[in-house]
Length: 292
Image (cartoon, rainbow, N blue to C red; front, side):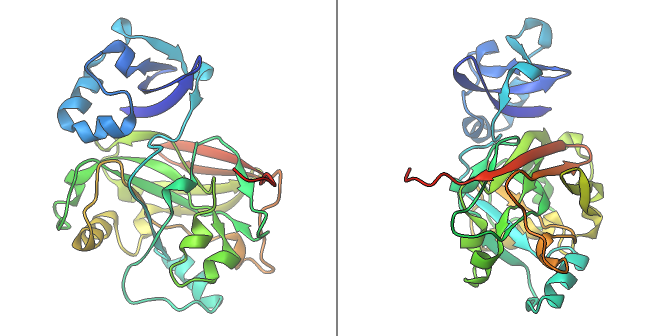
């Protein structure tokens, strides 16, 4: 099942993709919630009810006629792990960055979340805009102290993430959070692919293309800490909630590691592709020079 948040004809709703159609879930079944976060919080019974809505009995829209929004626009947490592919870790070492002996986590503030095809802003404060193609994990149940063996049971699905990074701001703080959290710098989507459609999330090919040129290519089999280890580590510290997003790391090939560094410019198009999930694509635009 591919779950989406979408806007069409002046309203925002949630749905599921069937072929080239989107089934509007709450319009088709009045017992279903109206937002993705509410649907995930409602648990397995609500998801099964959503799964049971049939195309021939549903309110539908052609996929081409809707705007896909961030699938989970308002999670409580957006967490990301650093240097979790060996070749990318070596890139960091070559740049003089110390590699820790344990998992390295940082926050992307949820205000950075962006739609799968929406523009990414070039900050007024920096020109060191970079990309990071990543597999995203969406948590499906409230959980704490989850073992590696239990971890698959708390995942509702997967999506693509571009962990857009502002490198000079990232390096100003050991937490990296500021350089990872500029507005619009968290494109996710295009939908949540339910976990039952991804039998093994550690076999997925992942790519980043910039203006059609391949910049990153890897496979989630190359993760240093796999997804289940990541969830076990995080839930040792905190409770994860339905809708929380975990970005699992990026392969080698980031712009900051090129010689000389290659940062994005206004007009560049960044495209993350993940086999079994799909792609997100975002053009770089100027940040408006005004208060919001």
